[in-house]
Image 1 (spheres, helix red, strand yellow):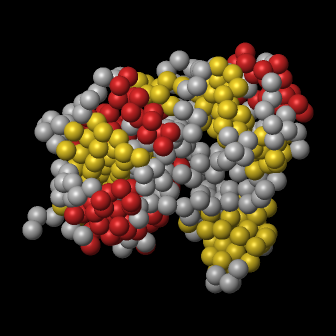
Image 2 (cartoon, one colour; image 1 turned 90 degrees about the vertical axis):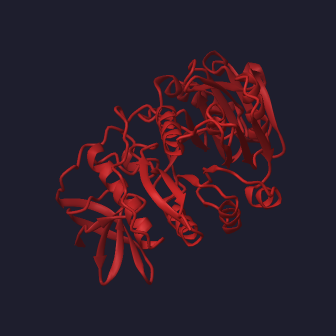
Length: 415
């Protein structure tokens, strides 16, 4: 079945219309004439499989990754980086307009000079003695021996880990989470969904490549080898990162985001600032160096412990961290803030969080989002509560995937 690709959706899939229904085609580019097979037909849309490209579009390239066709990790390996950034800007703009009914101009996406080997964290799935990624739209595993989104040091863990799998017992599918410090290159491996903990002898060659190894059963996370945390550095600040703590997976772009936040807030040193969903404090501590005081709120207790330790490591004493969900902690504070930074998970902010932020008196709010859809929804609520969008700056934290980070500056409309 042939169709012409008219657009691209938020997952990086080409969009066509067949029999009056939107038809999503992974691997297709706007402007292309393609041959497809419908694999899922719903009342309002079709999901299709790309069988062939009859007329190619500008920007189509040969994927660098040998596993691309069978791996669900990347959506843009077949598209030039220039066009990828254009599509991501379009996704942000379309989401604001369609979901939020907002017409704010969106700046060009800030890309990477070299959009490979950027991930400092990767999650591999383990099934039937093999390690890899799930196939697109499937729970079938594609075994991998290389990945050009991670560093050569991380890639070198794949072979010894694969050889070790017969000696490990997982509640399948198991997981292996690998992190690397951008400061010193050290590696932390977490083996998840284990039935039992392996001995140091069983871990063998992994202890030669990893500085720390954790095992996680249903009830407990246990350090099996080495040090208990990694140390990261951002803009001259050191950060302790434990296995359960969130930390941005792209160090180079994360530094750019913090620079953008500082530029947007234009601090003079006298401000009281809220950092909601603060993680291990990478934004909070950067703000604390340029303001009077900062309050960080985070639901992950381990991340809060790390954030407090990070304040001590960096000799910063004007930054306080509280543990708890923002929607539960914020309403009871009754505090006023001059500015706020919010960096929520993909689900975005709860409505009550936005209401409390609006009542806090914050003149400027910076929203850092990893999901254009929930960003648009939340910005619409902020607009109803008296805030105006001043600038929308997407930044490519996840090259070759469909994900895009967006930093938005809002200011309170003068009454």
